[in-house]
Structure formats: structure tokens, C-alpha cells
Image (cartoon, rainbow, N blue to C red; front, side, top):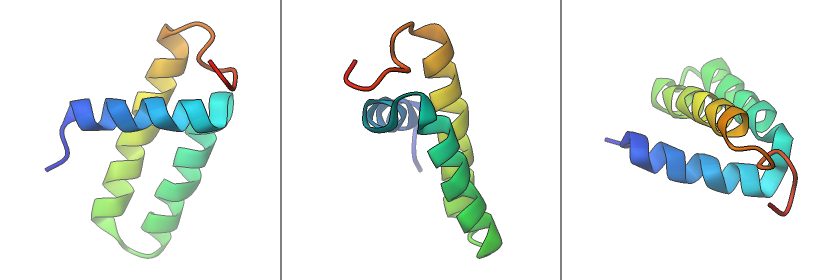
Length: 67
């Protein structure tokens, strides 16, 4: 099972890579898994969407690339 701490770590990496677009990228991946009826992958990426949204809202400057 993937822990909340694992999700937060992955979300930080996603924000570093994609900046303020991290949630959009995560949503796209979640939708791809949903379209393919891959529930585990879809659930992982939905958790990533939530974590990236929270990260971008709570940590000023994280929405910019390179921060």
C-alpha cells in the first residue's frame, strides 16, 4: 500500500518538475487510468492531484519552476 507520506514525496517531485501545472498533469494521468479501467492507478493519481493541490496552496513559491 502506498502511504500518505509516499504520496506527499511524489507530489513534491511532480511540483518540482511541472510547477503550477503539476495538478493538471496529475489529473491527466488519473483520467488515462480511469479510461482504461485501471482502478489502482486511477486512485494513486487522484491522491496525487489532492496532494499537489494542497502543496501548491500551502507553500508559496512552489508553483514556480525551479523552486
